[in-house]
Length: 238
Image (tube, rainbow, N blue to C red):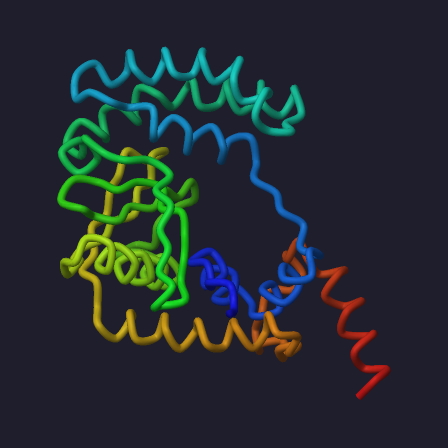
C-alpha cells in the first residue's frame, strides 16, 4: 500500500512538481527563517482574549530560550528576529483584538490521516467551529488568499470532514504579523482538484520525473542546483 500523500506535498507540487520529486529522494533542502519560526510560535501562544500584548511579550521572552533548544538556528539570526518582532508586537496585538473569536479555543499541530483518501497532514490550528486554519508569515494577496493555501485548506477539509463526519465549509489563513485572519469558503471544485493532485503526486513519488513547468521561478528556488543535476542525469538515459 502506498503511503498517504501529505497536504504539504500538495503545497510543494503547486510551487513546482519537481520539488515533490526531489523531496521523495531526500534531496530537497528545507529551510525556515528564524522569523518564520518565531511568528508561527507566537501565533500559537495566545490562549486568552485579554491582554494580547502582554501574552505576546511573555511568549517572546520564553521563545528566546526555547527555540534554540528545538531548532538549529544561528544565534545572530534569532536575536535579529527577536528584536524585529519585539517592535511589531503592539501592532500585532491591536490587529488581533477583533480576530480572537476565530482563533481560540483551539488545537495546535493536529495530525490528520485517512487511509481511504490516501491523504495525511499536520494542521497548524483547528480553530473554533472545527475550522482548519493555516499560519502564514508572508504577505497576503490584495484580496482573498493565495491559490496554494486555498487548495491546502481544501485538502485539510477532506481529512477533517472524514474525522468529524461532518461537512467542513470554511477554512482560514492567519497572517500573525499583520494581526489578520482571512476566512474562505471551501469549494467542491478545489476538493476535487486536491484528489487529482494526489494521484499525480503518487506517480512522481513512484519515480516519474515531472517536466519543469513554464514560468517556474527557478532562479529563486532553493533546489535549483539539485534540480539541474537530476535533470542532467536523467537526460543521459533518455
